[in-house]
Figure 1: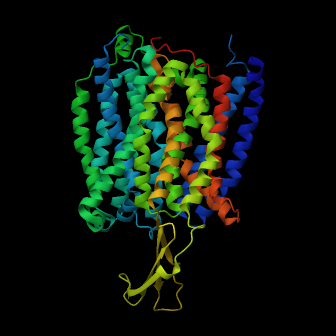
Figure 2: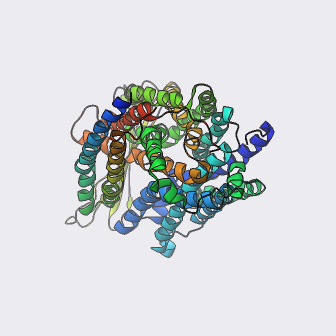
Figure 3: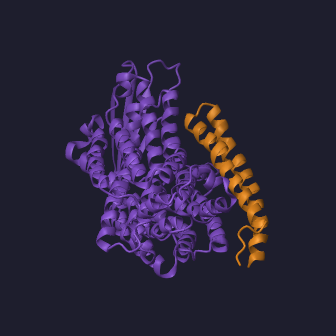
Length: 76
Length: 510
């Protein structure tokens, strides 16, 4: 089981990259650009997506992936 | 604590729960009255005010909460649980009361939205500090074998707070009428808060400090910097990450799907009358709330992990069929219209801002064979100067559903509340058991408020964006696309929880 836990670490690392890409290109940037064009609600939403939610998802999944790969969550 | 009588624990639960429920009430009253607040403080034709409005909704509601968790969590681990959650109570009550006192934009101009924004930020900070304190305080009093049961009472408070806010608004509105409520009556629910906070303060004042914290403090076992001990220490930080990614992230999106997205889906995507939707939510909350305690109790018998993960899995598998059914019942697409009962009334009056222009209002009334009634109000501004570009027509539609459909929708919302109770009922006990006494308040508050405030709080906005984009692209199932967000987040959370959470440690003393 510990082996599966460690191998899944690769999945979490990959997922952090995919999630980051999707949330930047599909939601964050379109909203941010629409905000710059004059829609104030979109501007706030875009900023939150780009500078809060995306770094949070990417950062936490990256560290978690690294920890799992290095066996931090192994059980005896 | 650990050995206290049930009567003593009930007193602790009562005092903690009432205060926490009032804080949730204070927090949600702003959201529930957002359209009126926006009208009074944030005029939408002014871009800066509109910007401040969105900032007040997003930043204070979601983003500030983790900062409150850090600030008050640290305080709670250094000074004590009781003192800290007394502070959050007073801060929340004061901020809520003052929002009800701030003069409107028409009276004091830009000071109005700025003051409201500051007060809303203070509300977010207070909420960030309250929950961890209350959950920790109750858990540190409860016996190990029934900790899930006792802490689940704290878990009912978020739903009860939202329920109370909807109820107070409905009662005030029906007592004074729509016009007076819109004029000044909306302030009453904010003022009511100060009374409730006063009572809660008096109850909490006589409570003693958590026995485990008092013992740790007397033994000199508290830490001087809980932030470093919580997040700078890898041994603890990996559990903070696990709490977030394997529990609170999924729980947060399921909570907000059941409580908020269901509501906005019916109002916005299905066009159901707002008051009727609020009544549906209220009934679903009434029937659903006891299940928090049931699943808290069950988690004492079979473990926190199986109950929470089962809730996540069932929610993931059920959301699509539930929302498809809700849409088929609530939207007018398949209804048969009784054309002879359709009426159209057109009125024309001078524009208040520029009397040379005129406002044309068209009210269309339609009735359907199943008893549903649709009222559509279309407002068009006709400009005297034809060289100027007229703004787009404002269209407001509201469908009043028949009793049988109403009951069916209450049932479908209730099922979603059951998912919420499964994932949320045991989570306070689960989080408390993950961390040691000396850094418990800080360590459990942050993942809770990131999971709920950010992952969960952004759920309605992200889901609405996904649905609107799909609609724009001509997707026939556009109304289901928003559901992908909670399904993906809860799906990832489920797998992480399943693989990495042990769930066997119920010791809170060390």
